[in-house]
Length: 89
Image (tube, rainbow, N blue to C red; front, side, top):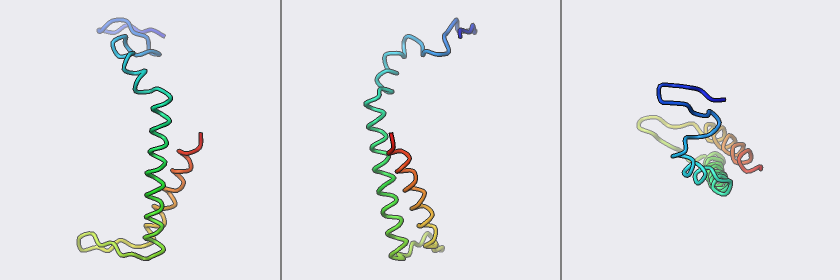
């Protein structure tokens, strides 16, 4: 699918020639897999600490407000789901 604009003809499926070299490096399968592993670990740690805060009932005070403990359970379970979702190939 090609299109003509004021900047010339281009293919919608492929990046411009000057960017193809960098696109292959940024979006390679190896880098994508590494990014998914790192994101899974981050969500896993977030889940662990949020559920730990929830079960231990550790108070969190932001300014003059206290954050309810039930919010940690919601955030913890959401992070757990994200970790499982990102961790499955």
